[in-house]
Amino acid sequence: NKVGEEALKKIKVTRTKNSRIGEIDFNNLIFGKQYADHMLVADFDGKEWKNAEILPFGHLSVSPSNAAWHYGQAIFEGIKAYKDQEGMPMIFRPYDNYARFNNSAERMGMPEVPEWLFIGGMELLIDLDRDWVPTNDGCSLYLRPFMIAADEFIGVRPSDTYKFVIINSPSGPYFNKPIKLLVQDKYIRAFPGGVGAAKAAGNYGGVMYPTMQARKQGYDQILWVDGLEFKYLQECGTMNVFAIIGNTAITPDLNQGTILAGVTRAAVMSVLEDMGLKVEERPVSIEELVEAYQAGTLREVFGTGTAASVAYVQELDYKEHRIRLDPTKYEVGNELLERLDAIRTGKAEDTHHWNYKV
Ligand code: COI
Image (cartoon, rainbow, N blue to C red; front, side):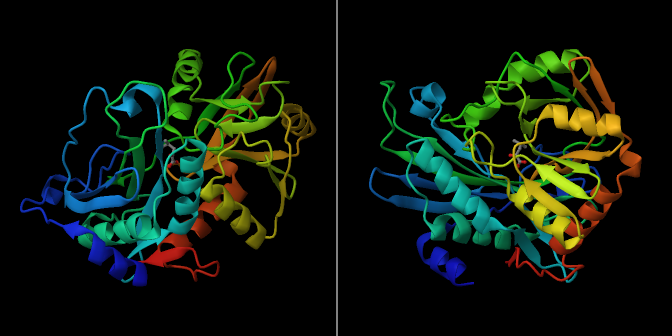
């Protein structure tokens, strides 16, 4: 690939002398616990990206006065790499994540990251750590590019300097069972005009406490609704949300700027259409789900995300309403997952051109 060649000219590569791959039990991968041998690190000096280097995975040395710790100029992405049937690594839709990363950067007042660094750097890294891409069912190499402010200054203003890093984690499934969701009217995740559509670290920090409260009541995640009427669906946990009503798939539209434009969400919409379902992207109220459930037409509810892929919902509580679904009978979800996995692992033809071959 041309981007990889360009990246090679600009990125210094220092290989590890002590691979840790022998320590990994690829049959028992837990999400986000272990990291591949190498990482990429680069600095933005206020004008340009430089010091780009792939080196053995290790700690970063950062000042306690680093602006990111204090004011949260920190963004990230989640991407997955798989192997095709010949064992060659492929990254799933990295350009979509690249575009979203730079949208997040803009919203957070951070610099744009160039293609040679984000895509090219990722390609070199996976080329080097190709043995770390798992092939077991439901497993993949989870790629985590991120950017943090780097100024050693605790005055409140956008940092001049930044660090861009990519770390990769061989990972198993994010959820190992169907999830239970709570719709509540106390906390909100995002409001129009806020940062809900950015993949900003603070969006995840802000939902920890409400999610802890929901967990105490036996739920896995909160199904976030809008903060004005507490009525329109936004996201479920850290995922986008879909409901299958009859032969139609519905998912909230992105027009309010409160929902992350999921790359898996986009892929799921295409695959559902391939499967012959009608896909509607529009405001979805919680009452609509309750009414469809009461009418017997609500077939399935699931979350979609890079980490979780497709997470089936088995319980959904809203006020006095109790929606109970049986994920063992999720025909749409099962076919969707099968088709997605087949594309991502090269078993099925990549008709949408989603796989980036390394
Ligand atoms: C992802 O699905 O990739 C996410 O970023 C969600 C979560 C693991 C932070």
